[in-house]
Length: 333
Image (cartoon, rainbow, N blue to C red; front, side):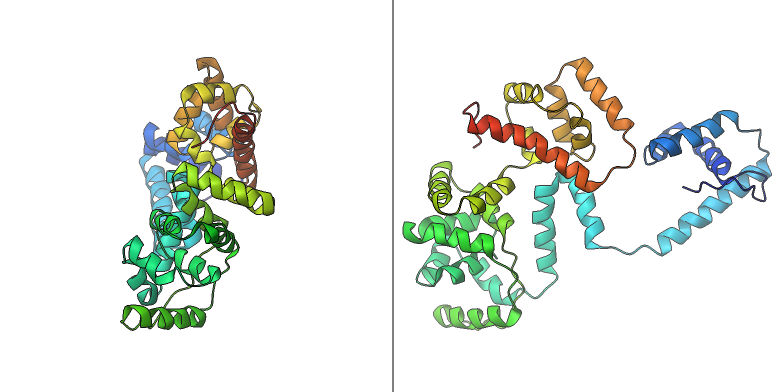
């Protein structure tokens, strides 16, 4: 927002012109726009709105014309970006689901012919195709599959290799296309059709967490418990991706009520500022009416905050849930 106090051709400062625009747009539109300002900016504009002198029709038209030209200029220079899309998705569906959607969209922009033939196969066919391959190769193939299908394939593999495959998948880094093409040609000899192109797979903690999250509880726990004895740091990273802030909305209200009494009251407004509506409703609904209203007021007064601070606040809330799980107060399934 322009902060200068220099008068313009209408005799108004930029802040006064913005205040005039809010009045011209009407209460509903002005309310939406004012929410995008930080606390300081809102106070400046509202102060000018309350004390704005009477404007004639010509002055009103000049203000509307100026902001219309700015809007057209902004629209004409818009350029989409993955980062912007990710931020929008995070506000709509939460960070965990946003990561998965962006991952699928990113992959769709690249040639998927090499792995598509395998992705389209049923879990049993994929298992038969890769069951004799090395763990690194299996994890590479699983990184291309939807989490539910990857979990199905993993359960069909021998128990002796499951943990190693999860470990390899969690540590998997983007692989050069040439390497994947070589794998594609090798696998194509088993299924008969030629595979020519591929994309960089997306392994890592998120892939391992997504796969495990879609598995049944008992085999998943067995894999993680066995891995925890050998590589606890890796298991901790995977678990941190399996239960996220957005998953709080799925917990029983009684569990949330207990958790809210242990959450740092100063951190909750910051954690909820970028949360989905579903999470906000669940957490605020687990609090008393007075406490929930107090949190809402603090959220409105936060102003601009850093994404890193929001993530840290959300992690602190999730940490309370994890501590309750470790102490046996609840079970995350």
